[in-house]
Image (tube, rainbow, N blue to C red):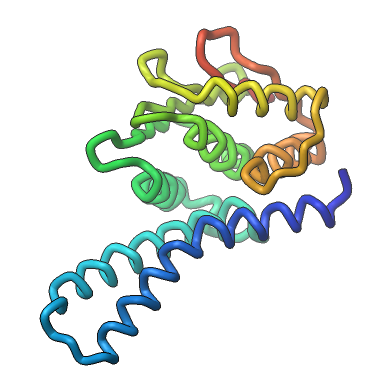
Amino acid sequence: MNKTPVTELVCTRISHDLIGNIGAVANAVELLEEGDTDFLDDIKEILKVSSSVLSARLKFFRMAFGLDNANLTDMSLVEKTTKDYLKTIGNKNFPINLNLGDYSIKFTRIMMLSVMILADITIKGGEINVFEQDCKLFVNISAVSKTSASKTEDILALLSGEKEEYLAQYAPVFYLRDLIKSSDLHLRISDTDVLGFVIG
């Protein structure tokens, strides 16, 4: 797959993940313009939540998909950005938690994309674990987490090359696959009951 389709998939996925909250902000502004103060508290809450989600997602997408920059070497910022992103997709009653251990800076973007992929298949919250061991990055979902069987099957097929279905929801998978290949690394699926990656 060449760079153009991957770029198109990433742009479509980012747009999809932002459009809902952008629409919510637009609706709130429209209500403000109408001058109806009966819903002022609701409007403030919509603007607060939507702007927070948009900010967290944009920061994450810029680091995960954007050009290399100094932010990728700031481990504490990477951790905060990734955790803030997970808060935007997990139900507050069923959060997706990140247990981020030590890892080499060279794995930063790969880690973020892997976490994004695993978060996409997580149902009703869970835990994603990340750590480096023997120069390999391990990213996996806790065994107690519930995941989507159909999405897991699709991701495995895409990573193995058995399937080339260019859907925007799987943009992080294609981007990760290309990034690993260009970095002269290898990816294998971890030997666990739930989806996990070993990269090195």
